[in-house]
Length: 316
Image 1 (spheres, rainbow, N blue to C red):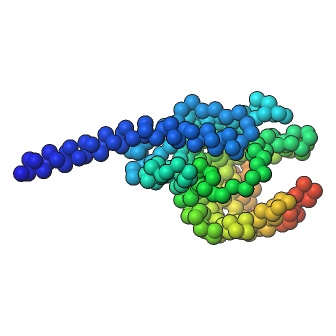
Image 2: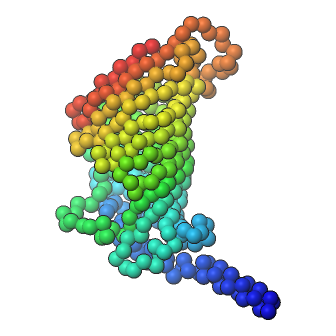
Image 3: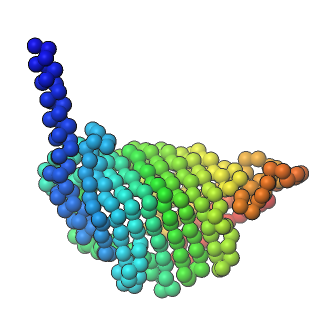
């Protein structure tokens, strides 16, 4: 009797394992069709990818959809420019979502990506290469979208982000950008816990103000998605060796963004200033003898639009 029971359990586990391994092949064509449908309906650009994989084992009992070598190429007036490249983009969703009937959107619980390249360009005519959304005058309900996003967390690893504003002569580059966030996006008001690290380079009018500065930020953001308002509740920012703390909020408006931010250095020794020196040039900064106090206090307040900029104040 025990042997029969044991054989039955082994057989049951074997059948479940075989089902978990083979089931993704049954859903692959449907998922690939939904991805292509989303691209065609939402994006006016040339999009390609090398493969779509589905796994029921990596995050069981959730299913994982992985898209390899996803690339988005611009059309006129940025013909052939790479807007986005992702070595791997993955979506996690409930196992039951895969067997939903046709016409029901797949509810995505988590988004992850690694080895990304993002190039944002604004040309001399004021055109931006990220404006690739298709124009659709027909009203659509949420159920018309192949995917719906009820995120609980996201994780982006190893991003190279480049922003080039030709009219303003502003160049920004973020290398080795890693960013994670956790929060219940189903709610309209939530706390988002984030962790970010990167190396930043900023050039304005040919003057290099930051060259591969190490930045790290751990922050809890209070998000009001109804009013598009994002308040910093807790934060820990470090620029190279300089610690900075700040508070306030950012609110998205129809014509731009409103900023109300205050920042200062939590300590007041002259070492704060030395912390702004990139480590590659600083040498043995710990051995430098300094005296006196040095503090940075500042604020950023006002509306950023095509014709206005916020007022920026800083005191040393």
